[in-house]
Image 1 (cartoon, rainbow, N blue to C red):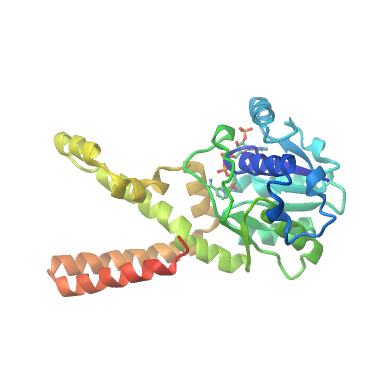
Image 2 (cartoon, helix red, strand yellow):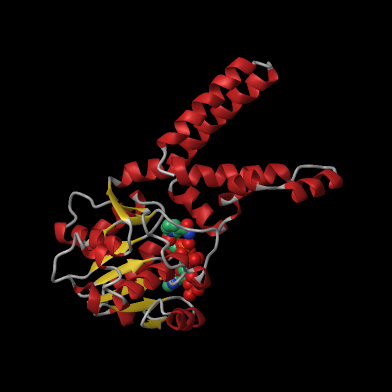
Length: 300
Ligand code: NAP
């Protein structure tokens, strides 16, 4: 079994680290194989990396995230499964380059944070494609940000379409289970609206929050705010202080869903602003009581 990983950054590197750790200690991780057939081939897996820069390839091998790494996609010619872990805008061009290289029965999956535009275009290019999105990350990027256990007990969305072969869906499901993740299957469209609410809108809100603080005109107040910033600001500013390229591509590739969520957010903000302007404390208290209760609905 040969698994290819294209894009050895935070996500690609973390997938490689997890797969090689599981492969090297199968007894320790046997619980991850419970749902998988006894003839499970993961244990003999060879992990082949491809990344843009030679220094990243060398670092990924040194960290043990991949067995071999190259800047050349042709090194994946014999791969059984290929995970595309590049920035979102490079997923389709990368798969276009892989089409003449891979064996026809190879399975391709991706980890892009947006699914509908990717699934719609790749379904035409490669029938054995299953869209995927691990719901895990940090504010860091690059191979040195790769982490073991990043996906453990986290949701891993897969978005097969009506034409996706069952065997491909099963293989990607098993792969996510080997990573320790909990697989959730849904349509690409539902995924994109859901992540607009819980991932892409928070990035825009958090970025706007940081930007708003920078409008403070008094240097002494700004300096004091920087000194006093504590857990509340750390929690609310974290995703706005993350990878700018990723945030930009979330907005670009999930534009309609992000705009719909931003519009609802703007209305909610207007309502709270009005309640404070009008000193309508009972309405504000009711709102905050409701949000305190609603937060419990999320799997945090
Ligand atoms: P990242 O840390 O910046 O990693 C992306 C890697 O892709 C870079 O390290 C770069 O490697 C490599 N790359 C760039 N162009 C390439 C090319 N043409 N061919 C091969 N490799 C190339 O970003 P990331 O956070 O891992 O994000 C990668 C994907 O995961 C994105 O599609 C994103 O939507 C998705 N995702 C991210 C998160 C998150 O929270 N970060 C969570 C879930 C899913 P070099 O060092 O060689 O240039």
